[in-house]
Amino acid sequence: MKYGQDAILNNQLERWDNKNNFKFEVNIEFGEFTCLCPRSGYPDFAAIKIKYIPNKYVVELKSLKLFLNSFRDKYISHEDSINLIYAYLHNLLEPIFLEVVGDFNPRGNVKTIIKIDSNMQGGGL
Image 1 (spheres, one colour):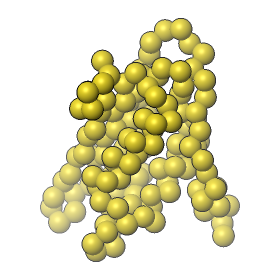
Image 2: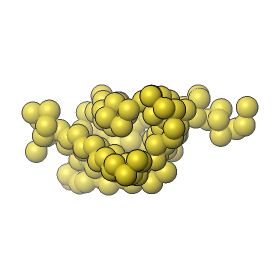
Image 3: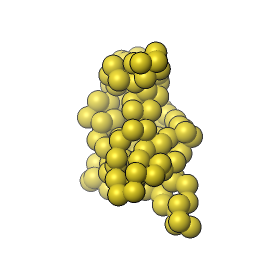
């Protein structure tokens, strides 16, 4: 097994304490997201955009990168992948606000953008 594969396999999504007294917004873009179509097995490619307002915690970026890379061998739909990313981050960080957007590349001439945020869940700003 290559060291990168081992890092992804043994990764645990981490959080750090938010040591700041001010409210602020964090924007993260991950332009090389991949997963596998659960029906065809073909790869799906997307840009993942994460926006959140921290409460007590912020996400550790390397662990987030490895977490997102762990989807590359998973047979999962666009909708399920974005909802799963949202759920993991929401449970880990307990943010004031969280938004996750998956902007998937067209396949078969169909483009999909999946968005989930705290306001849709009845919380947030």
